[in-house]
Image (cartoon, rainbow, N blue to C red; front, side):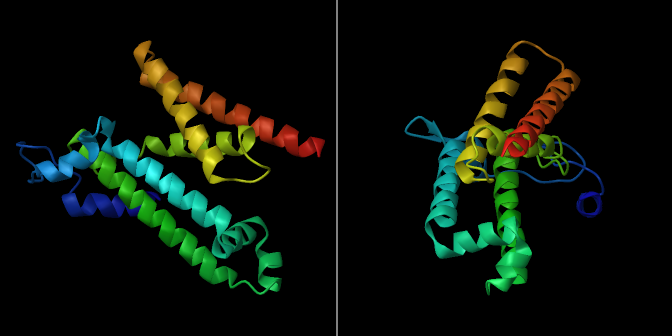
Length: 195
């Protein structure tokens, strides 16, 4: 991850792109900014995109044979391979889908804040991991799943929004996020031990 981040920095020589500022030059067209800042019928465009991705991912993973292959490959690769599933191919597909979704998230983030900062998404990594583990531990059906991860991300968003509204410093928010992640991991471990 750090290697890729370093490669990103080489293209802009470590500079960020701001509207009308010296450095890495560039500007954003209004239609690009609409992706992150616009709304349709009063619903923000990022929310529409998020709900669409959640729905598509849920239908794909839960209702198709290929989705079951992804779950099998992630759950027990050797058993999936012995069952005749091309596990190496499905691992590559999983990374490709992950990269696609990360790029969509990057586009939304860039258009939302209106700047092209190379490391703008770096602080969001812990939020994503915490959301996935909370979704697995609290809302999961004994396995990672789309709806649980979605609910975990909504919970993390509500908590962070509340902390921001209470003027909690960003470094204290990181401590609270870490504590939530540890609690979710402990809850998951305890649940697994009981079975």
